[in-house]
Image (tube, rainbow, N blue to C red):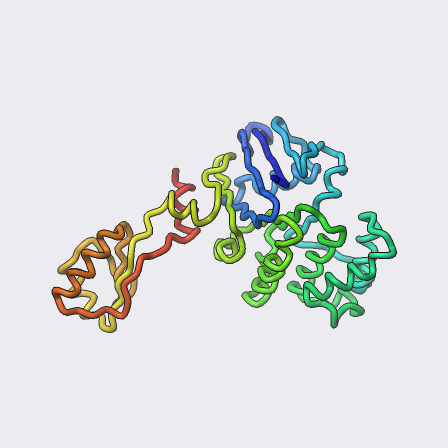
Length: 301
């Protein structure tokens, strides 16, 4: 079942076309990485999904129900974490979740238990009765996830949730997204590509108002980029000697050679050459294409 279906979505701002026949599907249980350069239309798409912005054409369905501009009926299926969540600083996390749960229609009988579960999930149980005004940015992001999940949404939309966090804070958010995968589908928009690689099983790369790449991450890697291979030596002199005998590579570091377009057959030939030269590298391995290389490849087309 597809939790989110976008079909031929179009949006213009004056003379500028932001979205052009955009179509994508997010299946239940997926963590879908929604990426693209600045101005690609990611935030515009999310606003249309939430009914906050009118589309010029096309259709969006959430759990089979059509999204309408200015109507919030489908938002009962959706939790939303903006890039900079705002809070009433004088409230505690427990009070804030009680407020959000009440607005979302969560019954008072289950609200306290649900709030306790979420505070435990996001690591804020020990701070449940502190004022939010004293929280760090990372703590506020974790509380933002808790409020977005308070009504058990079918779809969680995260807009740049890790962009302003340090590595430890980013790891906390990634771990939380992994933990909730069994209970909600996630649309995860970010420009931090390593975070996408760490947590997402599917990606959609928005470019020119359309999806330039879409599918399971491992499948997209296999179809769209040359992986190449690397040969690393203990000494720079060994790398220089081998490069002169086996050209086509470049020195990634003084002792590490990168053959960016090398195939598996090329790597086997390199191993044969190494044996003939009686050179023993520290390692030789195929290089898995990074999401950054896929991004650059698709954005250049």
